[in-house]
Length: 129
Image: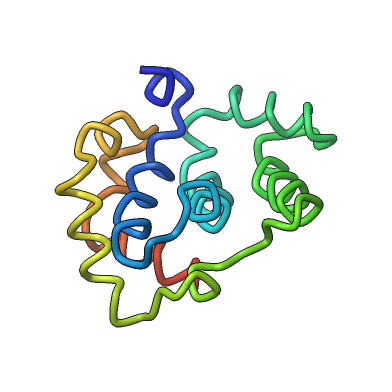
């Protein structure tokens, strides 16, 4: 319930298959995914992402992903999916399983009709390598 209310559903939906495939801890998987998920969805909820950006020292919704990246680097959590053992050949499986395992999270993603198709998920995963 909290995940849906907070609107952080895309990252969680995309992370569960990563954890299942490579036995990655959920937090590290989210660290690899969340900045890109923010980049893909901030324009659908500028108020929320702008607020987060301001808390992290930025000004606008566009500042949110870079500020989250900086925070992750400060916490020594600056990781990519490749760092976690994910390879390009894994991407179709990850996208398909994100849709199977977490359809509710995907539907509740801001801008879901544009960012949660299998093709869109594959592009997002690829950009996280």
